[in-house]
Length: 166
Figure 1 (cartoon, rainbow, N blue to C red):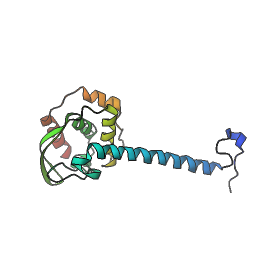
Figure 2 (cartoon, rainbow, N blue to C red):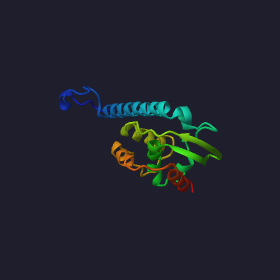
Figure 3 (cartoon, rainbow, N blue to C red):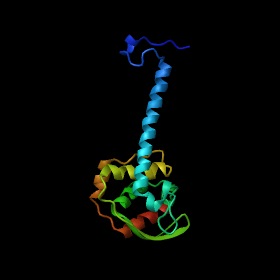
Figure 4 (cartoon, rainbow, N blue to C red):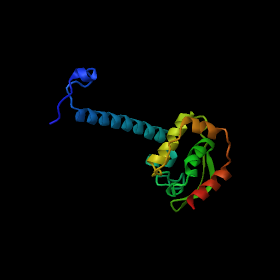
C-alpha cells in the first residue's frame, strides 16, 4: 500500500491522499472538464446546426446532408480542416451528393457568429462527428479570423467538396 504524503509536503493540498490517488483525482477532474466542454460543444452544435443536420449530425434526407461520418472527411485530406469553417462562414447552396443521396438546398452563412463559436463548431464536426487525422490541430478563433477575410463563393466550395470526396 502506498504511503500518504504529509500535508506539509504539498502545502496542505489533498491532505492525506497517496500520490496514486492524487493522480486518479487529477485524471477524474480532467475528464470532468473535458466531458463538460464536449457537452457544451454538442449543445452549440444542436442549437446551431441540429435543426437541419439532425441530432448528432446524422443529416435529414432531402434537407441537409450528414456531417457525422461525412464523405469529405473520410479521406482525411488537409483541406477538410478549412473546408468546414469556410462553409460555416459563407454558407453553401447547390446540388451535392452525400452518403449516396442527392441534396439541393441552401445553408445560410453564419458570419454573425463569433470566431470562437465557429472554431468550436468546426472542431466538433471535424473531430467529434468524424475521425480526425492523428495530426489534427484544432482550429482557433485566430484561424477563423483569417478565413473570414476571404469570401468564398458556393461554386468554389462545392469544388473543394468534390476534391475532398475523391
